[in-house]
Image (tube, rainbow, N blue to C red; front, side, top):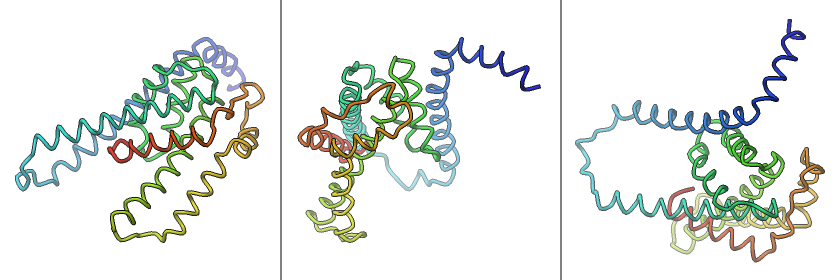
Length: 224
């Protein structure tokens, strides 16, 4: 039966690729919204609302800081896409970041990556370009997280949970992996690399640290 259905299914998928990509991208965003709504609904009954007095000034301040953090994060992602693709619409990349940022805390991390890849592909970017950009972002976030941990734990005198040498090792490994000569060898193994030729030549050590600082600010402001 499948051998008779497959040609029709393949024809449908080919004909409606753009619609399918949009459905995957926006569908994952809606799934994330539903997941958060369910969490709020299920945990709201267990929370003692009368025990706390809501400080509206504090709430507005937190929301403003969070919004600024999102701006830093979205600009960082747009710059990563620009560096990997060699040409990119910064506004579109930032918009896709805003749309998909809520999917990052879903139980299945792959859904967040799939939604971002689908929406960028719908905007004209190949899967390989976006996937490589995601790898760059994950390395940048790892480096920024290690720096944030060291700053918070030792600069402010907070007791460290993980020994410093472990965190420093992660920091060094992250910087080594993301260095252009090594990272280029790694992404050459990504399926589709020969077709899309994602670039890392714009990721100098100065640009990497600039991106790390942007994501570090986003973390401090609470959006990562």
